[in-house]
Length: 366
Length: 52
Image (cartoon, rainbow over all chains, first blue to last red; front, side):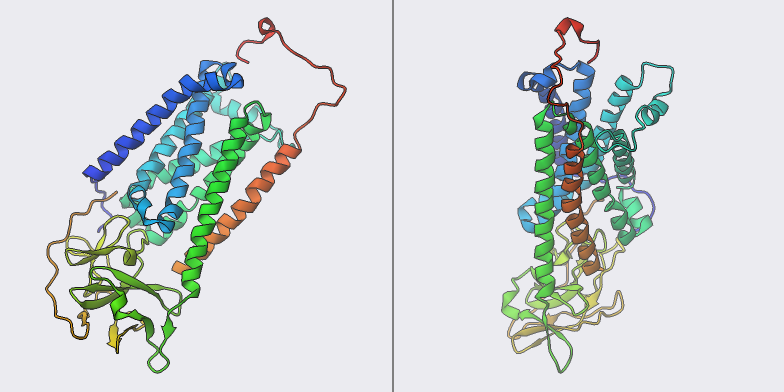
C-alpha cells in the first residue's frame, strides 16, 4: 500500500457499526437530558446548558472507557473481535463528543465577559499551588488535544506515512489522555461531592480498565514465558505436534528473541509466518486461512502463505520462516528469510497436497 | 518489538492503576472541610444567584 491518501472504504460491517454507534450516542444524550434530572436532585437544580455540557462530558468519558476496554477484551475473548474491527471510528466519535462538551463549556462559563473565551479558560483559575482546587480544566484541554490529534491521524494514510511502529507508539498516548480525563473529572466534578454517580462512574471505569489491561498483559506474559522448546542440534524451535494444528488455522510459537511465529496448516501443508500483521501488529496466527491467504483477524489483511506477501495490488509483507516436520513435531527456523522470499509449504507426512490460492477476499481501509 | 511493546503496555497500566487512584485519594483528602462549629447555611430558592 502506498502512502497516497485513499478515502475510507465503507462496507456493510462498517456502516452497521457506525449506525449503532451513532444511535447509541443520540440515545445516551436524550436519555441523560430526560432522566438525569429525575434521578438526581443535584442534577435537577442545574440549568439546561450545564445539563447538556454534563451529558456530552459523561458520554465522552464513557466512550473513552469503552474504546480502551475493546483491546484487552478482544485479547481475552475472541467474541469481542468485531468491536475491534472499527475501533478507530469509535475513537473519532469520542473526540467529536469531547469537543462538543468543550464547546458547551466555553459557551456557558467563559462567554459572558469581554475577555476572549480561551483567555478566560486559561486565566480564570490559577490555583496551581492547591491540590483540590487545581485548575482541572487544563487536564481536560490536554486530553482533548490528544484525542483530536489521534482522531486526525487515525486514517490509514497516516499509518502508512508514519509507519506502524511510530503510529502505534503515537496512539498509545491515548493512555495519557485517559489519565488526564480521570484527573479532569476527579478534580472537577467528583470532588464537589454533589453527585455521587460521578465518583462511582470514575471508580468503576478505572477499576474495570486496570483489571482488563493487567489480565490481558498477564496472559501475554504467560505465553512469552512458556516459550517453545529449542532443538539442541539444529537450533530450530519445536512449536507443536503437527496434528495439533487444525486445517485452515495456525498455532503460535515463541522464538528465542520473544517474537512470535504462526504456523498455518492449509490443505495439509505447513507454512510459517510472523505473527505480527504489518498493518497494526495484529495477531495473524489467531486468524485463519481465507481463499488460500493467511488473514489477520483484526482488519482482514491477507498474506500469501508461500512468501508472506500481500496479494496484488497490496504491498505489505511479513516475515517468513522455514518450517519442517521431524517425526510428528513441527519445527521452525528462528531466523527469518529475507522479506518476500518464496518457500514452498511443507507437506504433512501421509497427507495429500494442495492448490494455489485463489482470488483474495476484499479488504478495505478502516 | 512485540515483547517490548507488551512490556511497555503492562508497565503503563500498572502505573495508571496505582497512580490514578492515589492521586484522586490525595485530591479528595485535601479537599477543604468546614469546621465542626460552622453555622449551617441554606439559601432559599429565591435567594439563589442566577445560573447556580
